[in-house]
Length: 294
Image (cartoon, rainbow, N blue to C red; front, side, top):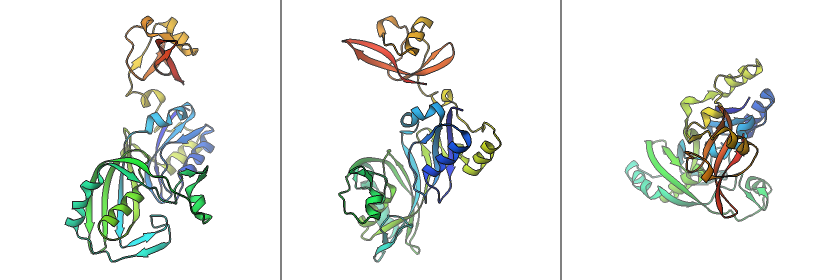
């Protein structure tokens, strides 16, 4: 079994826990790209078998979230799983809050929450936090492509937003920064991921449904094959002689190859996917080589 599952992760499970369950029942190497916090729900792409080599490629694109921000409280985790460490009057109106959003689109600098999986000195930040160790949290640059206010409830001091962002963006940090700009504090009360790269939540299968199919020994119909997953890339089928060389790891001068696409492409030999190929420099000459064998 090789391919990609689009899982609708339930609340209360870690992303690692989802992967572990699929690995146990499928008997295949598994991995995911793009961790979802335990409290979050939504789209979690899980790669199975040879597809684990493609984690970054398949899911490294833009992500979309729908989250709810509650004004007036701050927790140590940035969400409702943590302890409340501050409370402040939440006098925020819709017009005032909407006017802040353009300043939080584009390229931003974020300081991730202390309760996160980012490693400092080789140790995840959340472990430093649980041990009570004070460490410097490194800033990172992220991109917010779109920030849309979906609803605003002044009586509940809550706002729900849709966020299109780059990989590595922490919505908890974004919401905390938005609340601070509005003159109060805030924490995230709900989060659902609805898009990862080209994949959308409507394509996802509930985890329990997938588990039932795997327990029956079935190949779930939701499995996206390697060929389907790479359909967005240019496809290249060289002459059989050169295809054999490429499959065996050789680099071939681009002068010898016909109709070679520019950039990364999926390489086939007699209809069989060999891997991903790209141009490289070898001894002063531009060559083509399979850079990821599948």
